Image 1 (cartoon, one colour):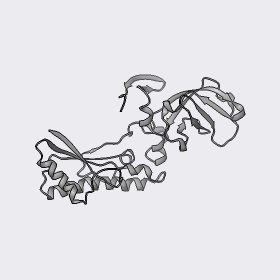
Image 2: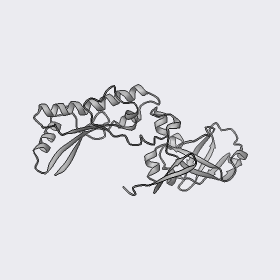
Image 3: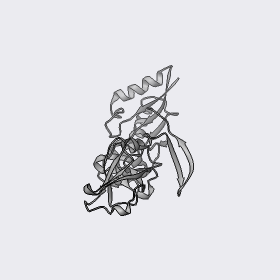
Image 4: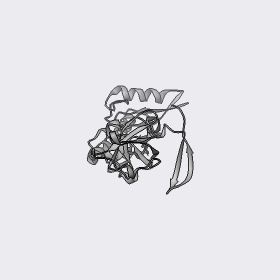
Length: 245
């Protein structure tokens, strides 16, 4: 038998059934009556938590409450409609809502954040974490000086850290708040000063290593075949990434 998950819309509006629509209950009833499928889980993803104003933790928390309420209330409605939900699980979560969970998780079986275990610069801006919590970093080195245009060239392009977050300078350079990534081409990028002041190129000789805190760790990690797990400056493990879609 197929184990089927019903996606529930908790306010994101991208996908999922409407908990107040009778057709949603009808769908679950058909699954329960099917000889080839079992209703395994009611699932929701509060992806609109990414759209809150920067640092608005209370807005995130309201979305986390709505996630919980959506799946728990829908499960109760199915039970009232005669659907056997004794073995049906409920799942909620996004990285922001797992970082700022609801007041309680009664009736919820799992939380499933995406980049919660590494975080990224987007999550710092949203308010899910502090900068020191970001575990995903992309190493790049300075390969060129361009004093006349006040730019450093780095050997990391969008193939190294993805093109997401361009309007936010692709993330940040750890320990160098005075610098921003101005642009990323395929294999190289340009770095300039955050406030337009002249760069002291003597501080960044050719070969200087930067740690980029990417805007979106999921997209950045997908650009690579391996993740090096480090403790200090030592590589203590290497993980192989799933390749392809």
